[in-house]
Structures are given as C-alpha cells and as structure tokens.
Length: 365
Ligand SMILES: *Cc1c(COP(=O)(O)O)cnc(C)c1O
Image (cartoon, rainbow, N blue to C red; front, side, top):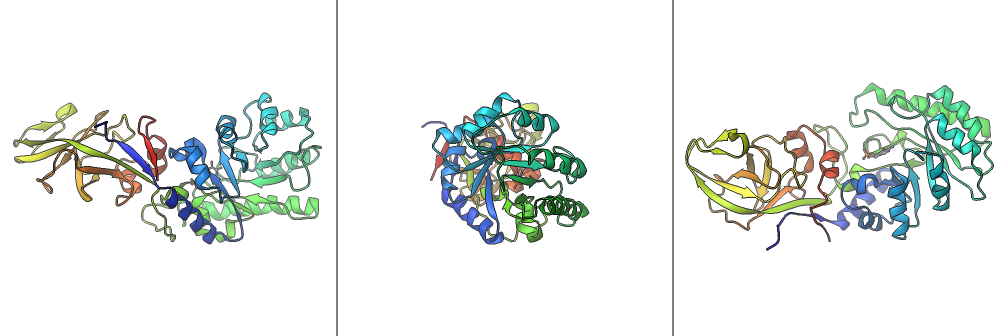
C-alpha cells in the first residue's frame, strides 16, 4: 500500500458552486479567482471545471502562462498587474488583462507600444490600504491611461478590493462602496458612457447585491468554504470541493499516564486506545491545531491528541475502540467543514487550502 494521504477534488462541486455564484449575482459577469494553484486545488483541472466562468484572475504572469500553455483561452486578469516593464510584452502577447495599482506601472504603460488592444483595470484604494491609488489620484491616473492608443473604448475599468466583507456589520463596507461609486461616476461623466467596474469578492457576492457592479470576483466560495465570519451563514448552498483524507496506520492500547508524541504534551487520563493517522504538517495539516480538533474516523468525529508531527498525527479512539489500521480518516472536507479545522487552528480556510503540500496527490473526480 502506498502512503494513503490524498486530496480528493470534486469537480462537480466546483461547477455547482459556480452556479451558486451565478444565482446570487445574475446580472454580473464572473471572474473566477484561481490564484495560488486555485487555492491549492490544482489550477488546470479547476480552470477546466470552471469553463463556465467569464474570466479568470491570477496573481502572476507565471500563473497565467500556465493556463495559456494548457490551452485555456478565457480572459485572464493579473491581479497585481506586471512586476516590471519587461513583463508587459509577454502579458500582451498572451492577451492578459492587467491591474494598474501604482504610478510606476502607469509609466511603463506610457512607454509601451502595442498594436493589440489591452484591457486595464485601474485599482482604486477605497479603504483596504494595501494596493491601489487613493480616489483623487486614481482619477488623475484614469485620465492618463485613457490617452493610451492601445486602450480601446471600454478597455479601461475600475477595480477595488474590500477589507471587511466577511463581516456584514462592518461600517467599512459602506464607506468602500461609496468611494467606489464615486470614481465610477467620475469616469462615466468624463466619458459620457457607462464604465465597467468590479468590487465584490465572495463575501460581497453573497451578501451585497449593491456591490456587484459588472464583474464579481469569487474565490473561496467556489471551493465550497464560507467567506463569512464563522457565526454567519453564507445563505447559499456551497459544497466542499476538497476532501483531505488518509487512513489509520496503527492502533495502540495505552496505559493511563502514558504521554503521546513530541514534547509529551498530552498524557492518557485512563487506559485507552490511541490511533496513528498518516497525515501531518508536512502534508499541510496545521501544526497548531490543538488537542480535541475534530477529524472523521469511519465517518464519525474523533479528536486530535498531542502535537501534530510532520508525517503523522494521533487521535483518541475511546469512541471507536474497534478501529483498525486501514480505517479511513477525513481531515477536512465532506462531513467536516474546513472552516471548523481552521477556526480550531487559529487560521482561515484559505490558508489551509493554500498550504496543502505538493506531496499530497490531488485525485480528481
Ligand atoms: C483573492 C482575491 C479575490 C477573491 O477573494 P475571496 O475572498 O476568495 O472570494 C478577489 N479579488 C482580489 C483582488 C483578490 O486578491
């Protein structure tokens, strides 16, 4: 038997979640966010399963080229634009759309000559305070970019990103929307026609129809995890795409007071069975998951014991004393929401997905 750890990727669930995004934002086009190897799910199979999306978004030229080399012909947006002037030529050759977030990028574009037309998304900082131009500066940049000969009518658009969309009650959301609507109005009155914009990530897609504009940019919801705070319900039926699973490889009967694993941080309170699972932080299971974090053994919850090691972790078998080596274990996915594990480990589903190790085989079904 080979090492039993794997991630099953349910491509139907992915297509289902895309249809949930369509239902929630019926009047917008969908730019599916598949950066970071499609949040760890494997970018090429995911892009193929999401062929119904209107465009894709990635973080770098390398990620986009991977898609082009696999024959994906959708529109692709580089979410941070190009990282140097030299990338412009390749980006245009491969028909990539670019975010423009800093004046240096504007200068590279002003020096650039192209026969082909290019789509640019001017990034306005409406409150995230990470990338993009402050609204007044952004308006000046708009005027510079619309003079570029290779940017055709409609080829210049607005984009902004939300800082607190996971929290519906945050006052930041309305403030960001106001600032976004303001730059949209500015350019529309300047050009005398409507201009396209994009503001919503998954959370805003599901909770804020007033933020949908022309393009929505769902990421995490496509993979079946809730984009909202744990206490809130996404209001859409999302299905988990990734099921991270392995098997029991040993079962031991331990004595009371025997301590388990590195640091001997946890000792058996009574004579009890302990199971060893072939999965650890070397596979992407969070090392900081505390004792008691749930896993599914034979479809039923059991708790983590002691410290997670690189290739293994230990579980409490008191509720399933009949368990045997070879029994199936789910670390997250079907039957055990990734958000539950993330919350226990003090992180978010996004990080668990992205950190799933390359050594874990992805099995597509
Ligand atoms: C990653 C990203 C998204 C997707 O966010 P989710 O919360 O995963 O839906 C959207 N827009 C930008 C700019 C991003 O970087």
